[in-house]
Length: 185
Image (cartoon, rainbow, N blue to C red; front, side, top):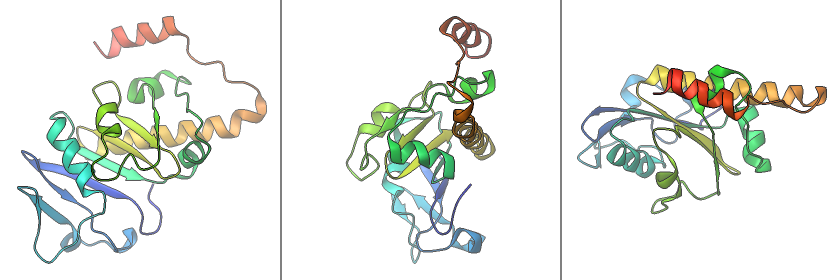
């Protein structure tokens, strides 16, 4: 789900301290020794973490339930990112349960000092699409976060490929409320 050298993965390991992928290392070449530890807000000496470290650090500080973050550019979600279209994940129950609604946020919302993503994420909003840039997905554990990303990407692929068949008939609000009561209460 990551391409070339783009994409950042981090995982909380203790308090607000976390491990994060480095900058300028192709994702297919990453070795364990390349992973950067951020402890007490400072990077491990001699290593350069991802440029999005500030955002990951702020998310961990503000959201104790988030322990894993993936920021990447998957092909079909990027179609929604570059067009600014809102993805409707009300396709099948799994998609909505995992993701609920995925808002689009403006380009630059992931830059240091910006609050948009931090004010948008929450218990019911585990992912955002950053227009003209990427998708950010959060979760409790790395595998669960990857699962959310995978469900989002395959939902985007299904919607994109199915568009020629006609308009989506999404799960209706009554069905959403039934899902919310059964799985999210």
